[in-house]
Length: 295
Image (cartoon, rainbow, N blue to C red; front, side, top):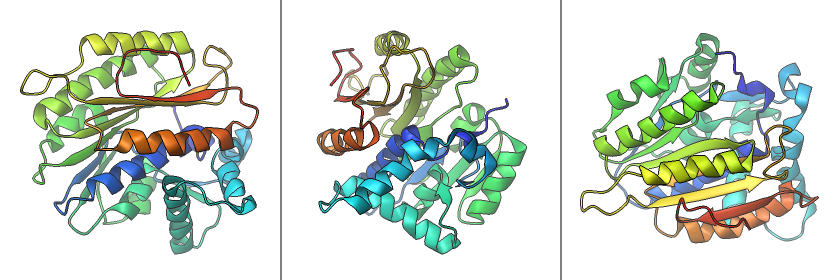
């Protein structure tokens, strides 16, 4: 596998994913009981936006930089979830004394965790794993392994509560989608109440919709026979059927916390307005895998 996220750090998809990650953690932390944050494809944890790799495509300009500019250039406050995300990044940058760094899911997650919580980060590439271990230190368990293969070893956790982030690189696209489906089922078999957040790319909208429709046919059921609750969130900044590259970012959430969908509809609309000034794309939030017309 050759994928390196440094080329894409801080782009619109990262913003979508990381705002949602923090919102889920904040919702789960309403209960005092500890939880496990498990990230199966963690990356290096911290990215340098001034690095040559990041500057090559300058994708952060259309993501984190655009959102920061909107915050500083407006007299009105952003939605609470967007403000929380930006404040977390600023605090991490201050701690690191590096205003050009961008924290990935591991560091943002660690920043939000409480003393009673734990984190496990899995990364398969040795160089990325070494950077991740250096970035998080002793605050989390870090493994150099295939996240799909190691997932089951950490479930169920002793806390009996978990947020599982499954975010593969989708280099072998069809294989990764199949592994995602298997990992989702395995997670919920081992911990029925796990909150699972799956990121997926939107490169061609109809292909994405076909995958969601297929997944709906095999969606896991809870103990009583009802379907496990589901939530789909998508943000795209180019037409969904444009074949030029990454058009959008998708998140599939199993067992979403109470009221998260209603809150997401507010901040995701605002995020789309900010990151897609030309209105080439769109957004949606729905509590079903059933494909409907986009917002």
